[in-house]
Image (cartoon, rainbow, N blue to C red; front, side):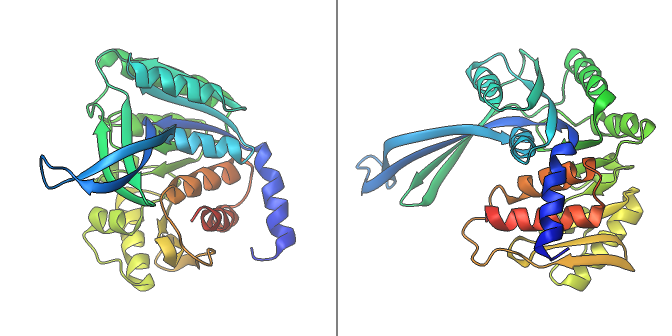
Length: 307
């Protein structure tokens, strides 16, 4: 899918995509300032705060991307009974077309990642979060909310950031629920055991995640194809989309059925956020009725814009 007419046609179809997104929501806090001296107390820079910005991160950013692409999005996640959880609710409320069911778990801290940036460079990141499986009550509430969301969605995306919302078998339960309704499942994975995603239509590991999950090299296109085909076969997943930063991405169904998509960006400034854009665009496109190959081609262009 290279010609502009086909691309425009595919973009126009995205508004027909109705997606359910389930995963770990977090807040991304960016603190901007400058560094002009070293502290007299220790050999560390003194960071002078000038401004800050807060936005949805993790699964929240995936949901925000889907809404931004024009898709209809229902979002299910878990927050703590804290200031960050209330900020997540506030941020979600600002996004048109995003219908959220946020389950409050008083035993958890809502994930917030604070990045300190000076002169365009990240100086430090500080994380405040709970990494633990959901308790029985939150587990049941999440599955109930997801079941409701599946009643009128055409694709399910699981955005797993390893904080616990999709752990302890929840990802597998959601995939089986979706399969019973013939809803394709796209997974942005976490960790090295992808057996938990068995039955998914597509997973989107980056190069490092692919190597960690398979124990195989993934430097060249040939190695990526072999590793992805091995992963798909072993974990019972229909296809693997290996994202490769400035090298583009490779879609692999098996060792004999694959396609490579070169990076669209002319100059790579920053690859952060590109993975969320890819999984959001692919899922919205599949929900809108596009083939997986056309969905990936469109997502590749979208990722190029981001980086």
